[in-house]
Image (cartoon, rainbow, N blue to C red; front, side, top):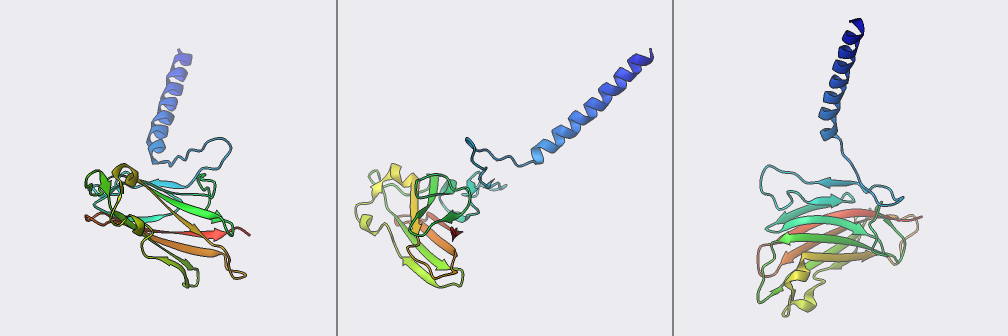
Length: 192
């Protein structure tokens, strides 16, 4: 009889551990990776309202704001179009910010008319690149509406003063026919 009470007591202890585990797991943040690479720091934006960023996956510590455009993902790629584990690149190597959207750009005859600006500044605040509209060539023709759901903007540092390693990129993508707008910024450093 005493062995049955021990078994019941052990089952009760196991049940307590399972309940504790079940309550702790949803509070954990899991990261995924492929192969031997390190997990990339990511966050999923959650909000009680219907914000354009609700459900978006933002990686690489990128700060993003959106108006009238539903954002799915924002992340950085290296010069070989691989996901960046850290916001680090080399002199002369491109770094890409990729913005994936669901909806929001106005479509006219199957075309979207978007603009994009990019500003790169040093850690001291000196602006070294200031591109007002990198899509100005498409001002009158637009781009196929399907292509506007995946936007990629590149930054490259071709030379830097000795000791200058940290940079900030500010970007803005906007709808030239509507109210849609995505603004953001990210920081990166030059590999030593």
